[in-house]
Length: 202
Image 1 (tube, rainbow, N blue to C red):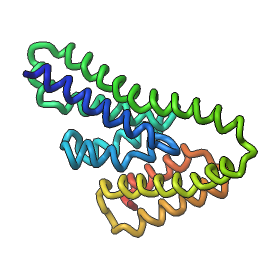
Image 2: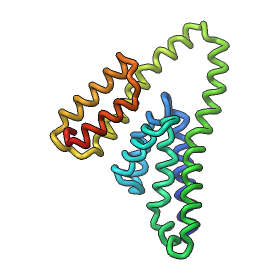
Image 3: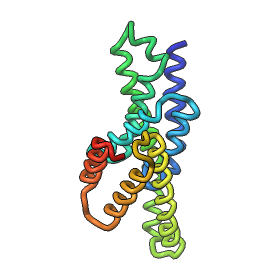
Image 4: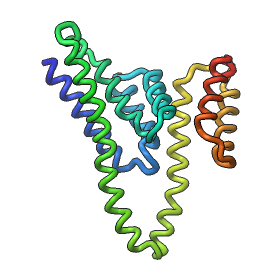
């Protein structure tokens, strides 16, 4: 029974992320709201803080921002009651399954969108002068921005309120303007946000 629960959970996550990958316009972070709903609200496999921590860690680490996906797969496996039953008798097996869950989640979010992007990019490049292709590319910009804003609002909901929402909103708007208008490295903005949190401003 334990094994069937573990494999069903891994398959369910794989299939859900596989389908989301096909609509992840602008990167995996744009489907974070639906991943949050699926993992936290619908199934209760993660807490909001665990979800936010995975995204924050992936943003700070070098590499693509989609690295929060395998972190979520890893954490879901470690939180699984079925897997915890194995921890006493075979702790090494828990880590192996957690690694498999992380790689399964990563493969699910990367493979379909990569194949689709490759095919569509080749097709669109061959027809790049057509007005329909230019209009499609221009129309994607507001879609991506809206999805990123939705992801940011979702993450903000899981952050404890210290001095009201105004300092958080101000810091968010300031960071957005700095990214838009300057060449300031994102690590400085992350460090500034961490400092503001450590000082209890937000």
